[in-house]
Length: 150
Image 1 (cartoon, one colour):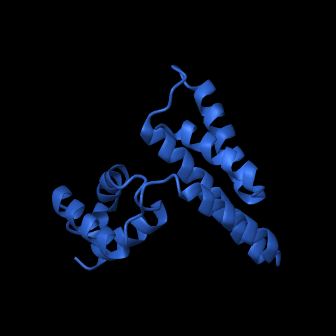
Image 2: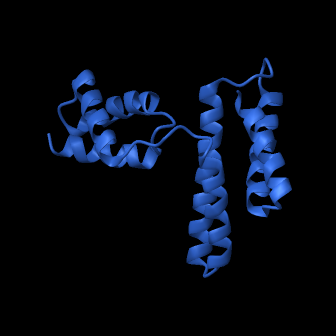
């Protein structure tokens, strides 16, 4: 079952349950999917493109929540975080901290990185290999830590 079908099913359930937070989040995802499809050459999205789109939407919600927190608007921050949770259910399971460490150490060994100067090589490989399984910020921080300890 493709992402669009899953979104439509969840959208119907949210409407029946009158869950406004889920409705807003799912409508945003549906809108972004339609936009991406119409701007694409063949009108279809690959699974990687769908994951990247979902990650972008989650990141936007989290950044908005941070902004609301800094501006003393916790009720709006909670709403954004709730929407992020709804969108995250369509993403692949995220790696735990230990799994991420193991995966990055393997990538460091594959690339042959020996110092923090090799960050670019490691990040390139890690970003493509761990796409959708961990946030970019987490990957970057973990790569810095591991390369600094070499």
